[in-house]
Image (cartoon, rainbow, N blue to C red; front, side):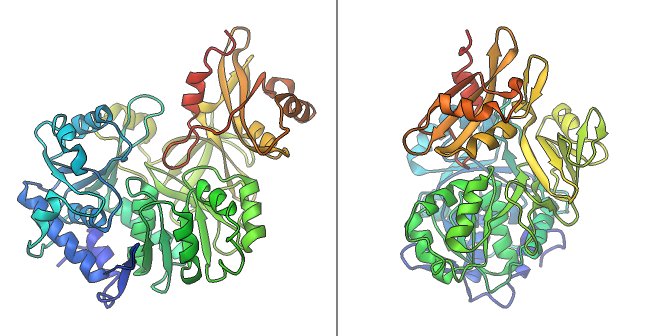
Length: 500
C-alpha cells in the first residue's frame, strides 16, 4: 500500500496491531485511536486532492492545535503535498509574505480570519478549521473515502518550515520525507520511547519541536499522548502520575517549579523530562533535580536540522550542555576555516540525514550555509569539550566585538545568572562611539534588593574589563518568542541609542 520512502507509511506501520488502542487522550476525557487518527488523515488527504492538491503542492496552515490539525498534517503528506505550518501569532502582513513566497495551492486558517486571509492568499483556495476541529475543511473531509498515499521518494519534500527571520526575511527550510523519518526514528531509540510510554504533549504544532519531534516520535513509538492545546500547569501536573515523559521548553519547567504541587511523588511514574528550543539555565536544571529527583535531558536542534545533539539517556546529563551528536550525525566547530581543538569556541557545523534540503527559492542563501559536502553552518557559536559534550555559547550574530575584542554573551550571562537575586539575563552589544559596540546586560531580578551596582561589583573580579557590561538594565521580563527564545534582536533595537 505504501512505498518504502513515504513518511506516512513508516508512521502507520509503527502502530500496526494497535489500531484500536488509544493514541491521544484529549481534554475533557475524549480519546482518539490510532485507527481513527489515520482514517481522519485519509479523509483530509481526499479533501485536499479534491481541492486540486497535487504532489509537490504546498498547503499552508495557520490553525489552533487540535487532533484535526494533526490529521491535516498527515493528510497533506499522504496526498504528496508539502505541509507549511504557520505560527498562530503571525499577522496578516506576515502571512502575506509566506503565502507570496511559497504560493500554496490551499491555505487553511481559523474561520474568524477567513476574510483577512482570503484577501492576501492570491490564487490559493482558503479553507477553515477552528479550535474545535470544525470548519469548511472538516466539512469537505467528512464522508470522504479512504486514500492511498501517493508515491514519494526519500528526498521528496514533506514540509517547509520558515525560520523566525531574526536576521532579515524569513527563509523556508525544505524538509524531506527522509529528513523527518530518520530523525524521529533516531530519537525514538536514543530516548527509549516504546508503546508503553505516555507523552505529555503541550507544545505548539507549528514548530519542529511539537510537530516533528513530539508527534512523530510518539507515532513511531506507537505510544499514547496526553494531547493538550498548550501549556497548562494544572493539566500537566494532573497527567504526571499516569504519564512517563514530557517534552517542553525551559519556560515549562520554570513555571512548574513555581507550583508547590510539583513533588517527587507526583513525578514518580515519569521516566524522562526533555527540554529544548531555548537554553535551559543551570539553575533550573539543578532546581528540577532537587524537587523531583529527575535530571532534565537537554537537546539541541534547529528548523533546518531537526535534532542534532542530545544529552545521553544513560550517562551524565551535563547541565549547560546539549550533549553529544546523535547517532548518524556529525558535529564540528570551525574557526577561520579550520576545525578547532577541544574546548575552543567557533561556529558549529553539523552533517547527517537530519539536515534539510536547502532554502525554498533561495539557491544563493542555500549555497552560503549548506556546503557541497553536506556540512550545514548552523550560525551557533559552540565548543566541544574533551569528553565530546557540545555547549552552545550563543548565535554568531550575537557575538559582541568591543574595542577589537570578542565577547561571547553566554560567558557573561552565566556569571550574572549565578548571582543571588538574579532570575535570568541577556547580554547584547549595541553601538558605542568609542568601542564600536558596548556590552549591555539586561537582567531580570528575582525578588527585592538586586541592583545594577551590585551586579557590576560582583563581575569586577571575574571578567576582563572589556567583557564587563558598560550598562546593566533591570527589566521585569525578557522579550521571548512563542518557543521561549529570548529575542535579542528586539533588545538591540530598543537600546540601540543607549550610548548616544
